[in-house]
Amino acid sequence: MFGQPTSPRFRAVLAGTLSAGLIFSVAACGGSDDSDSDTTTDASASAIDCSPYTKFGDIKGKTISIYTGIVTPEDTPHINSYKPFESCTGATVKYEGDKSFETQILVRAKAGNPPDLAIVPQPGLVKQLVATGKAVVAPDEVSANVDKFWGKDWKAYATVDGKFYGAPLGASVKSLVWYSPTDFKDAGYTVPTTLDELKALSDKIAATGAKPWCAGISSGDATGWPITDWMEDFMLRLYGPEEYDKWVNHTIAFNSAEPTAALDAVGAYLKNDKYVNGGLGDVKSIATTTFQDAGLPITEGTCFMHRQASFYAANFDKKTKVAEDGDVFAFYLPGKDASSKPVLGGGEFVVAFADRPEVKAFQTYLSSDTWANTKAKLSSGWVTANKGLDPNNLTNPIDKLAATILLDPATQFRFDGSDQMPAAVGSDAFWKQATNWITGQDTKTTVDNIEKAWPK
Image (cartoon, rainbow, N blue to C red; front, side, top):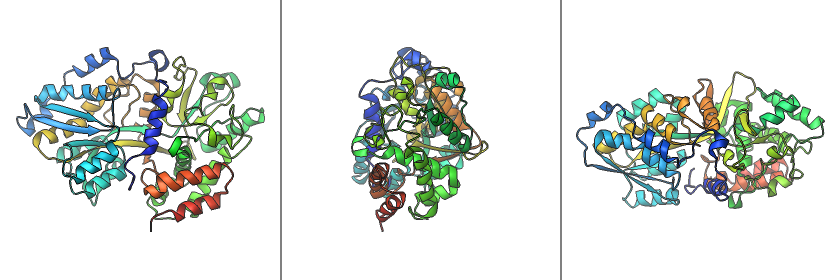
């Protein structure tokens, strides 16, 4: 995010999903959590092909530092996923997790004290780090892996002025709708495959007197961010990835015809009293309902659908079975037709600040299908868009769903738009004006005010 490395939305999401201890149980997700010691031991000890790293010479005894915002307990599967590389090469990886990473990595880079590698969660922050002059262009081996295992869109996010700086790592899918498979079956509803079918289903549910949707955007200082995801999803679906890119990059104005219509399309759901806010109140209740609580009425039978990213699974009670045949699950938020597959999401990139042989070797490992599958065996709640991933290595049903979407050849992935916009827009005006919009402000005033916030 340009000028906004601290990502208050990320902190709010993380705090919200972890504070109450609402993490998947083994029964709920059909797999293990990140701290499962047995899985960790088995997967991290598995043998891998060491030949890709011999070209970097003898690096035994060398140390590579990696810095990230991924902290305890989520750091455990990362650390264990490095063990096969360490066994192959004799090198040691020094892991440093820091909740203040997104601020401190810029401070350290500018001060000339960066780590060897950093796991960077936003394309905008990648660009900021390159601008410090301390980031190092990725080696040919990493570039080749990315060409093989990722789409061109992913490579472009870490390419600055024609130079490629960092391989993608993890990924997330935001284009999901949570629902109850049991309630759908009992009511005779089917999962929609087009936007028209989604609208028809919403009308069908509303005709019974029930509320098809529940939503909430309260998130402390980050209140309003869920609406930005809704708008980005509809911008992608109604106008396609190219127009979406123009909007995000301000090639077209925020208040031009297409984004204005996209927000109105969101309003057809979120500002429709017949559709919302099941189990929570009227339209205005969306502003005061926390995003953590917003989808819970699905399990109470007071709403049928909730649009939110894959991470939302952590907010359900640990006794809730999250599975295709469970209490709750999710389906892909459909496109205009069944053949198009625009996907909104997020991800991470590994950026280097050193070009020593051992650093290049570790970068190569992290950009490989070998690492992706090793990590998959160790983690619940983690996926990647690496095409070499075997989805069977994922134990969590939601992870498998997300991976299936990410790895679909028809998928047109786009990174979260507000995370790419200038901070004055993406994490300020967009959030605040979206909140005003849901409480009664008209669409034109909303998009006009956001446009005025765009830096000149």
